[in-house]
Image 1 (cartoon, one colour):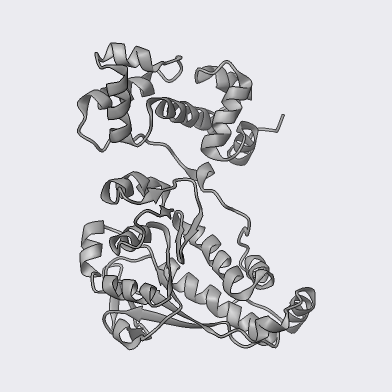
Image 2 (image 1 turned 30 degrees about the horizontal axis):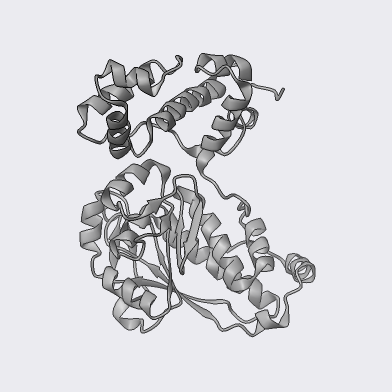
Amino acid sequence: MIATNRFTIFVLSKTFRINQSAKTKIMKHISILVPQGHTSLPNIDGTHQILSEVNTFAERMGMPPVFKIQLVGISSEISQRNGRFTITPDCLIGDIKQTDLIIIPAMHGDMQQALESNAEFLPWITKQYRAGAEVASLCIAAFFLAATGLLKGKQCATHWASANQFRQMFPDVNVVDDKIITHEDGIYTSGGAYSFLNLLVYLIEKYAGREMAIIISKAFMIDIDRHSQSPFIMFQGQKDHDDDAIQKTQQYIEDKFEDKITVEELAGKFAVGRRTLERRFKKATGNTVVEYIQRVKIEAAKRSFETSRKNISEVMFDVGYTDTKAFRDVFKKITGITPVEYRNKYNRGMVAV
């Protein structure tokens, strides 16, 4: 529980004027799933703690509890981390007739095995959603949510490092690599790792109001306005495919990133028609050729900003750009921030110019 004293609560309750409608809202039932296997304990415990703290603040401000929070499983005791931890759910899925929000924590290890071990959850989630419940997946729990079919045709966020694997497994879902949060038709997804905290604040704002979301963001020091995971993405290329010609094309781009590379040059070098190259490249990597070239160049620029004392122009020329505006625009499009902002964020030795 967050350490708070009477003065803190007094200040908060005076600063944030909670309207009367907030005092009469019906308590929302929250079902935090506890899957079998290796699951993110911070997702489970962190979600439980933060939502419980909403109730604590509400009580001290003269409001009724906002949430009824339960850990929900498919067995009475669930071993985690090779037996190092054991979680005892509050109830089993068969005990829940209706819920308002299902939260699915990230599941680690072999994804197919995780799906099989927890298959009993899938029809229950779907049934609850059809009955009016909302559903939220945290990080790579998006894989499990997608297995229900509820994400078909919708946008989805997940950990950026798993985005390509997700696309291969669920091609009918629109993965948005850069997003921290997606929300569509009562289904929520969050980006990688601890970005689940941003989704929790988003959900708290929806269920308990902006004032409560601000209180929680300050109490837990969560950046309430962070919307993109782009600055954290490390581009590693998409090479988990069997197209040998495209593999060679990718390697050539990565080896020659400092040069000005054209699609026509690549098509000629590897004896493939331009249209054929573009079609096969997009199918294999998820990027167009031009997008891939840009991402390789920008990843090289990012590494230089992180480790060297070169200025913006020097790095720009090193990765094959000669137009400052073009470099800045592409860099910001891919990372979400400008070259100067990125350098100042990740290189302590540099001073903004």
